[in-house]
Image (tube, rainbow, N blue to C red):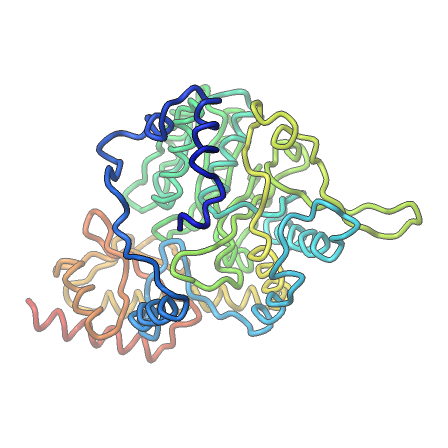
Length: 444
């Protein structure tokens, strides 16, 4: 890759000199020594383009993507109407980046404006931005919004958030000097409401998920009331597919709604790219990070679109910025907007109903197998749920993998987090459960 690095050795030395450093090692001195590679990258010599294509094609053939999938945990397999990728492949979308010049970018700005409108209608909020990088980033940026709005450096979060989201929140908090307090999960798999009031003193607010990481449906109204009673702000981390059927964040008093837009027409893609959505009330609008597309009129009275509220620290006083996000996941946001407009309210509701029905059928069939029990049998859930097995979960998953089935995610405590969406046919669920019966009967 050295031929593609634009900075010469001389230029690098000059930049290091300006920084008062002697070497690249000094530049990265904050990275602990045990985390550094301390050797050249183990890469082969360069090859021709034809040879490289052959190598990559060989890697691609090793991927298996035609098996049965019963796993979610933050990224979900949903049906994507063919119109979504087809429209997104239009060159004006596919190659677009930052629409700095509004007069040259009306189509893209309108697409982003429509995306924001979709997010506002889904969440019930007043304003949305043009997206951030992913759901975890959106949650962390919402935490900063709480801090800036309340001028407090203490945040609560539910232990039932996705662990990856929690990790990003903690990383942001560590670097910003924000104290984070985890609110535990009760025996019913739901956030402990009583612990919120006990920890809200001095806190700017709280972040909770609906549904939570275990698929359980939280009492978001009770959480919101507990947070607001202590003069805090409420952040709802939501699965957007649920919003076709369940209460919208605004309806239970959330001040900020965030989440990952991957379920809205984005393929799994081995982990990304995805898109994070953020929406809030008009009162908190000026604390919303990232890009915001707005509608106005030109000198002749025509409807036009612009980037609005841009004279902020991200652009003009970066050393005082509350957020370093100045861009957005434009193509992914456009795909999410196309998906929602294609599905419409009725389609979104139907998808949500299918997810609930398929997941509950899967749960019933699994619970009927000797050696498998539902961990939270009395708690309502959406499209995911946790089971415990007498057979070690990893052994069960390994056996399923051997026959082309991706089973539930093995949790650190040994449980399994299973998922079903509209993509899982009844016959596939029956086949899975028959297979598990055979596996558990043969191994025990």
